[in-house]
Each structure stands twice: as C-alpha cells, then as structure tokens.
Figure 1 (cartoon, rainbow, N blue to C red):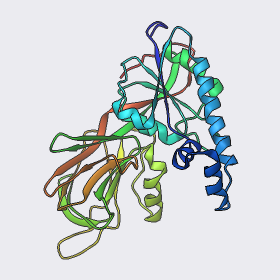
Figure 2: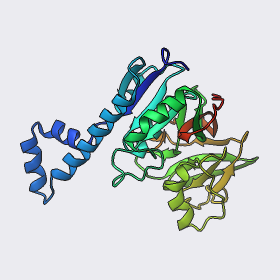
Figure 3: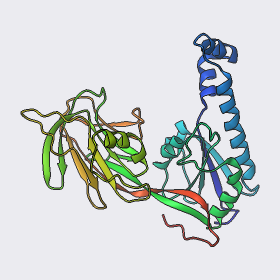
Figure 4: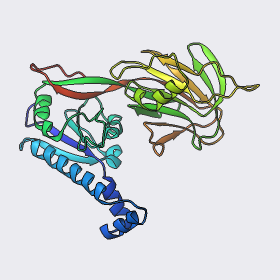
Amino acid sequence: MSGTTARVVIVTRPTAYELLIERHGTQGQARFFLERRGQSLEALQQAHRQQEQALLAVERAIPSDWRRGRVSRGELDRFLFEPEDLVVAVGQDGLVANAAKYLNGHLVIGINPSPDRYPGVLVPHPPAAAAPLLLAAAEGRARWQKRAMVEARLDDGQRLLALNEVFVGHASHQSARYSLHWLGRQERQSSSGLIVTTGTGATGWARSIHVERHSGVALPQPSEPALAFFVREAWPSISTGTEITEGRIEVGQRLEVVSEMDTGGIAFGDGIEADHVELLWGQRVDIGIAEVALNLVLGVEAEPRAHSR
C-alpha cells in the first residue's frame, strides 16, 4: 500500500460525558443531575478529555498525504469501507467488536485512550503507538493476529456476524422453544436461549457459563478457528430434553436451530440486542465459523508480511 492510496478510517463512539450533555442539554444540568445522586461530573470529564487527546494523537499520526475518514459506532452500518482502508478504533474494547462485522480482511489498530478504565484486550496500544503502527501496516510490516468470528445464517438469506458471540432465544428472555440439531442428533428444548462463542468472546459471557457449570468443553483460544456453544438453563419436560447443552464447533461444522416460537424469537450478536433478526415459527438458523475474520494489529515486524484477506 502506498501513501497516495492509503486511507485511515478512525472508528469512535460518543463518550459518557457527551451522551450525558446530549440528554440534559447543558453541563450545569448534567452536573445537577449527578450531584443529586451523590455522583461527580469530573470523572466523566476526565475520561472525555482522554478520549479527545487520543483522537488528536491519532489524527496527527496520519501522514499529511494520506486520506482520512471518521465514523461513529452508530453510523457503521451506513459507512462504506474501501478494500485498502486501515482501520483505527479509538475507545474501549467493545468498539472493535462493533466494527468487526462491517470489515472484510482490513487491518485493525486498537488504541486505548484510558488504560485505567479499559482492559485493552482488543485496544492494546497507547495513542503514541499510532504513527509507527500505521506506517508498518501500510508497508506490510504489521504483526497481526487473525481472530475467528461467528456467523449465523437464516433460511431467508439474512446473516449475522459477531466477534464475541451470537445469542439465540426469546426477546423477553422468557423460555425459548426450538429444536436443536447437532452432529446428527436432534432435541427439542425449552431454555433461556443459547450462545455460540468465539475465542475472543470466551473471556466474557461464555466464560461465566463455563465456570458456573464446571463445563468440560475446551473454550477456544482467541486466534483458534473454533467455536463453543452453551444452552442456558435447559428445562426437562415431557416434550423437551437437556442432553445437548454444550459442545465445540470446528471448521466445517454447523449448529442448527429451528424456532418453535410464535413471537419474540430473535438472534443477535455481541450483546447488541437492538440489532437483531427475528426468528419466526419454523424458521431455521445455522451457526458456524465465519469465512471472514478480524485482523488485529499487535505490533511491528522487521520484514514485510503478506496480508491475506
């Protein structure tokens, strides 16, 4: 990639301070709202300043002859990424997951503006690292890790992609009824829904389920092309069973769910329930490893590395 063709797209999201001001209109009103509840505006202002400083550092790190763009999390579904874009996510770890499903082989650099607030699993770099990482990515010297994603395909052609996990269940979190098909076995179930996790998501929701039930299923590693599924609180009855409640999904395998919900059946990814697809009675969704993956930049190589999509 040459400097004349490179475009850097910065992905960000509103800070808690910005959202509070938007909700209350003025800083004074926001302060009054918090102080009445024994809270302070200063901590939110500090986090906002850190975010703004990080964004400024990234902007300054982009060579002057490179093109640049910026997109907020809420606009990702309407933003057109170009094939050679370099993507820089500035914010908390979840921002990378939000962006990943809209990318196709792009290199992603995660910048952590507040190391004291965010773990930095997917945003491991300080703002000062933006310049050398951008140059390395453009010259093919970036050291990056491919992270598997999960795909849910509906029988009507709709598709969901997620970096962490996909949830299938009832919108109200009441009992979800469906038929589960796995490795030649079939079981009707009534449960609190099921999740299918990647290695990236295996440190979150899936991990809590895994620990709580003392599961023997090996959770996938972040860079491993494998998934794991867990049925939540399967209920045994005359017509529903609890035999198929967890497993590993390897390359080429698919888990199939057939909805038996008249209303309220949904599937969504990465915890974004508002961005869901509906599952009507009889509708099928099969879940497996996605063909696309997240390419997360970890550092700089001494020699150029081939960047495959």
